[in-house]
Amino acid sequence: MGRSDTSARRHVVPAARHRVRYGRMLYLAVNTAVLVFLLAPIAIVFVFALNPTPFIQFPPVGISLRWFEKFFASRDFMHALGFSLEVAAITTVCATVFGASAALAIARGNLPGARLVVATMLSPLMLPAILTGLALFQTYVLLDVGRPLWGLVAGHTLVTIPYVVRTTLAVLHNFDLRLEEAARNLGAGPMRTFFEVTLPLVKPGVLAGAIFAFIVSFDQFPVSLFLVSPGSETLPITLFNYLKFDLDGTIGAASAVSILLAFVVVIGLDRTVGLRSYVKL
Image (cartoon, rainbow, N blue to C red; front, side, top):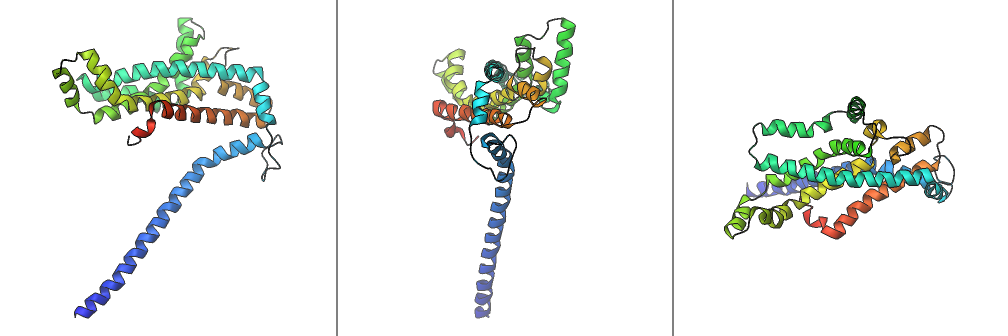
């Protein structure tokens, strides 16, 4: 009886190991497929940008920087790139300040109907951005203010605030209030407690929201389509207008520059404030 039990266990253990191995292989295969699916468009963009022919060709016939040269030599593209960076920078500051303040008020203010307030703050994510742009355009027309820079920044801020609110609330959800109480018991005032205790602890959520705000604003098309004025167009709008008359590797070069800029922003923040220490979020 004892020998039969031992033999059965020997057969069960290898079978369990095989199931674990196959499950792990399936898990890795699915994750690899998802990763390839996500990165394939980026790879195609870079192939298009580096291909010497004015159309996508597989396999590529060579590598050329002619489209990057054309992009950086274009006055329209350079003006649009600078204007997009300006709008994205201002939007990031506004969205970060307003979004983080709103998150603190929601988490600490004991506001009546806090869930409704959160849903309202996140509502721009549920509404198609093109409808948001159209509504803002009609509002500016009724107010007879034209299409000023502050109007475009306001539109971008409206659609980027939810990212800052959400990431900051995620940090505040696990915030230990005893740390603030300890600071106040040691004689720190409200302002000093905020800047030396609260703000450093919520910094990862605020910075994550700021990164999202910058990237979303820089690549924002639907809202910008209604709110930009002639001569002051963002890069996505300039690309859209360029596509009406031509389609060559310059589009790929501009897209590659946008991708690299977003990557540089993330790496720059990692180098300056150390985002790697907050990967647990």
